[in-house]
Length: 277
Image 1 (tube, rainbow, N blue to C red):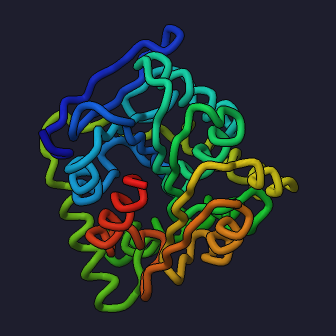
Image 2 (image 1 turned 180 degrees about the vertical axis):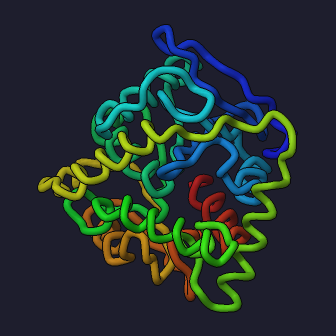
């Protein structure tokens, strides 16, 4: 079973169906992936998912109101984190590793602070602590990328995730081709209402004033990003690594918000090394 063929399943979470997929090796501590703003299950790079699944049981999930999951998406990260915790309880998982990318990295931060006993290790990719600049401008950045992509006949992720260099755009083409490899049982697209809720949550996150709470996160954390993230400045990634007491940092050259996809082979190697402890 691979990321492009994994069956989409649902589990009841307090009366609401949550859509999810599983790939990889049974047993051990599961690795749960939390994805970015506007994303659904099909937005996870199969090269990353299958690479991680070579050694781990990997679980992808649409939280409440996202993609194929029911309910209404909340407009704050505390509620998103509680939904994620409830999902894990529905699967009867009491210890997990987390990979949070972008918005999912914020959800992961909140889970680690509010439910420390649940998280063994954590990977935070292209994300930022509360109070750092970037998240509040996400709506404007998305809109500008959509307009540019429409004008140039390209995908917005060409501009959002990758550098405007030949190497960056070649990586974008390869990434988008991998996303299109799944041809059946594709997820439902995210709704405008859910995107609006996510953007509200991101604005509130940037207005936060207590990133020092990350000092309570004792778990080992791998923090990664590209060196030129134009969505949420890479300076936020560096700040995040400094705030976490047990963090290691990896910054990929000549890449942006989608650095883990551009350097998917290296990222998978580093992630598996880290998760092995």
